Image (cartoon, rainbow, N blue to C red; front, side, top):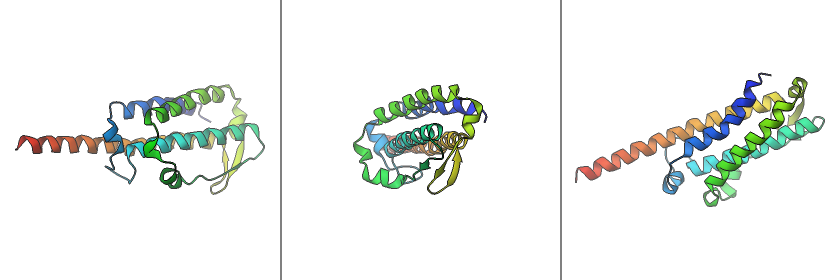
Length: 166
């Protein structure tokens, strides 16, 4: 496994923090841009997914062929009151979780990254696969988040120009 993935995994915490910096509470709750989730829902999803990911990786490291259960992301967003959670806390949990677990990953011998579990939908996945999946998962969702921020900027510019013409 390319151990550079561990650095990318850890760096994702700061990437998420940087992506939401400066947004107002109103902006993070808007349903804008691509997808149906608000920035708030997207960030809470990332924090939830990472807590599940880290648990999966721990079980792959410590157990023999553990079962890794599927988590329905839309059900989490729909039923866990994302709009009433703290985006700041979610970002901090995400950042700390990645930073803390990267310390563990750096200490593992190379053969540990070949250890695997069986995901209830995907099938057999190695520790290396899981790290890569969650690095890519953040990249995927940061793309949506940045598009949502761009839509907010465009909306603000449009709103401002509407007021200028009055």
